[in-house]
Image (cartoon, rainbow, N blue to C red):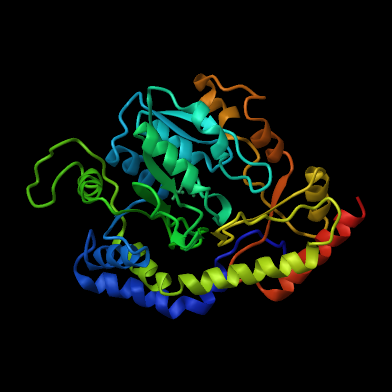
Length: 370
Ligand SMILES: *Cc1c(COP(=O)(O)O)cnc(C)c1O
């Protein structure tokens, strides 16, 4: 059987009783839309972050789009982000009517290079959307300093960083709002789509509740400003409440896998393992390694029945859908070089130990024989 980079079935086998009980609880509740489970998850996810507010939405992309609208981004505004991210970060900026502006990333940890931020700020810049990539946070102190100096809002893309901390502070609590995805592969994943925005700001919370519900304040059934239908599903919310109680265990299990990879692969010439930046607690959404002969390695690993992902093979600024933005190959040299050298080893909390061993043995063999 082919070894996959991610698989939810081993976890489902362990947690089946709880998951099915969550489904049954919602089906019997008599409230299938914006009921007690969504409210409960919102309270518990806010509390997990030490924040007063969380608004459940239907997916992570819409969490970013609605989050940007709620912090004041309007059509034509520029939003600064990175191009080595899941395309939805940029799709969401575009959907909000804003113009994505890309900064390059650091060569060692692949995170937004905040030294290059200042040069990207123009009179039209409205917000910065840092991506806490692969499970660790962007260097937030210089980013926040610039945002304050220039009066910019900050939306953190936390789709890959549930439970991550930066100098002790949880991802999602260091800007005006934090957008999360509960896509099944994520560190906190649903059994379908889901998302949420956390915020300390009362005004942002209020606008988000309206935006996800057609633009209505629920009780009046009158549209104030046309919004969206972006509600979090009640069944997914109840499953997520159960899984939130285990989030710290999932993270610990991911760290244990990362530790084993480091022990098993740390001495290989040319293979660069993830670097944890100062002050970061990494949650290893993905375990991304780097090698100059990436494509040869992936080819040969297929012979061991191991199919690995590249996240992400095509930097967003080079995608045809964003050609109109006018970015050319060569404009983000580090991002572009990394895209040709990175690949992800299998990573999920229930990854069996014998599979970890097979991956370590195969990668050792292939890299040594290059
Ligand atoms: C997964 C992801 C998203 C999108 O989340 P969906 O729930 O799939 O819409 C956005 N940004 C990043 C960085 C992601 O990894």
